[in-house]
Length: 73
Image (tube, rainbow, N blue to C red; front, side):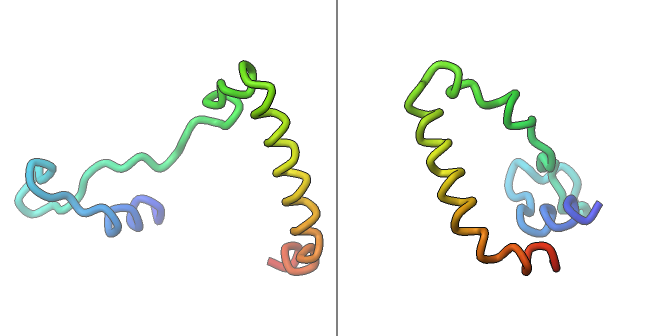
């Protein structure tokens, strides 16, 4: 519910999106499909897989210095 409230404030309707004179709300998607369902490029592009693995390795090495903080949070 809080995500819907936040998005309602971030994306107020205007113009043709106003469907009720007293309700300033429009549907905004909150959830997305899982990455493995929507990511079709990795199966057809070897370079993507290579670059993704490099980026994940770089992220792991950079984020390792913040492990205590991340565990605390």
